[in-house]
Image (cartoon, rainbow over all chains, first blue to last red; front, top):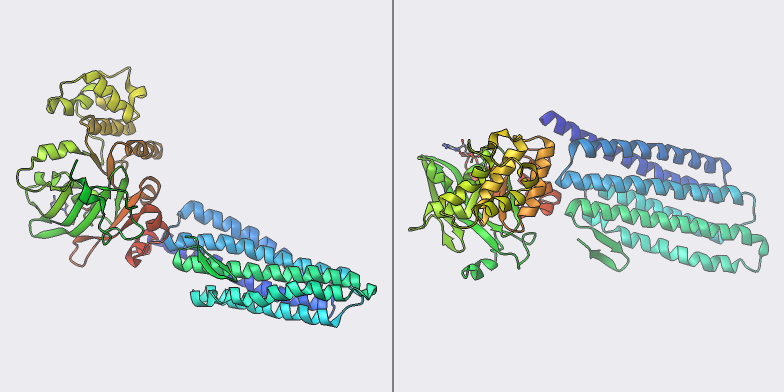
Amino acid sequence: MTDIRSHFHQELADLEQTLLNVADQAEQMVGMAVDAICIPDMELAARVVALDNQIDRIYLDVHNRWLTLMARQQPMASDLRMMSVLLHLNTTLERMGDQCVNIAKMAQVTFGLPRSERIIAQIREMGDLVRQMIRTGVEALVRRDIDEARLLPAMDEPVDRLNRNMYREVVECGPDPSLLEWATRMMMVSRALERIGDQVVDIAEQTAFLLTGEMMEFNENGISGTG
Amino acid sequence: MEMLEKDQEIDLTIIPPSGPAPAERSAVRARDLSVFYGDFQAVKDIDLACVANRITALIGPSGCGKSTVIRSFNRMNDLIPSARVEGQILFDDVDIYGPGVDPVEVRRRVGMVFQKPNPFPKSIYDNVAWGAKVNGFKGEMDTLVEEALRQAVLWDEVKDKLKESGYSLSGGQQQRLCIARAIAVKPEIVLMDEPTSALDPVATLRIEELLQDLKERYTIIIVTHNMQQAARASDYTAFFNMNAERAGYLVEYGRTEDIFTKPREKTTEDYITGRFG
Ligand SMILES: Nc1ncnc2c1ncn2[C@@H]1O[C@H](COP(=O)(O)OP(=O)(O)O)[C@@H](O)[C@H]1O
Ligand SMILES: [Mg+2]
């Protein structure tokens, strides 16, 4: 009995570790995808796609292991909350990988097009902010630190602001039609980075749920409980 | 039932925010309950208000006093010579251990179903009719028996063989027969001590479903060693543990969904996640 249960807790810890590694990988993929745009570098873009395939495989594996644990162990209390968090995390990270692929594809289709350094600088800034968010979100989860989790909505604000600003930047490219194709694609890159930021806030919400048992919506207006 | 007013306000120290809504009234309540077997204190200072028309599950490690507590709700402990009860069991604000209270009347109003189905060596019909006969029931016995068997969801299976022995039934049917027998005397509360531990999973599930129907009419208190059963079938869960002297005490009591998703006490958490001991 004791052995079965401690085996379960080991498996729970292993699943979490697997997903934390995926989160690290996603953070690096954001960096690579942004570099693929900014350098620009086709090879980096291809590597992002390959890494995402890896994430997809891990996603399926985690899902199967998760189902087995659920069926065999019927977890309760904090174990049950952890299971819920792991399922969420798995989906969220898989989607983050997809967003990185979206960015990488933009790098491929815009390769060689004329570009605006102002927009490049803004994409870089967003990429740096989002990577910092991922690191903070993961750390909050690892440390079971709700205060750190609560930092995420504020960290997401400048990302949202830069994304809104991107539209104006692209419009300002208007007088130079040769820039327009590249610039409109950059709006999609910006949008993908903004989505990743939201996904990290989602992870922070999950961390708060794990720790409190309450589901809270983190948004720019603060934190509202729904539990 | 005019004495219910007071009990409508359930002591929040017993059932904190996660507990019953204010509108729910307690049907029976242990107050400072301690039970001794000779010099040994089996349970200590239990405060527990069970909500009317709800299912309360008592869970906890073996020997923590669940059976002792549930037996004190209908004075079954009186039948154990060494047992001594301190504190109160309040039923409509009347202490059932108070002077002048008739334990037989208590046991009519608070029925009990045991771990092993224990039908009498009599016909199915007589098993159900027995309690009412003892209590001098003057009405239409056939109707009473049918009604009890229907409530126990056994009628369709036995209506053509009411004269056959109770022993001719399967284990799950025997347990439903015992439930029919318990409810035939129209109790207000039905106590069940591990009522499914001798049954297979299908029979177990049928009893659990039956409980959901029965709670419309009765208040149910069930001891179970099966946490999944408590999680599936109860509305409130009380978790008991033992202290260093092996006396049982109430660790935590609240809505079942809260106990199994976000217990407040670390001891509860450790027990239900299997990190105990
Ligand atoms: N009739 C009895 N005589 C003496 N001790 C008893 C008797 N019944 C129970 N006990 C003791 O009281 C404690 C609680 O028992 P019980 O109420 O049966 O616990 P549970 O139902 O939680 O397993 C145990 O230590 C048990 O040995
Ligand atoms: Mg027992």
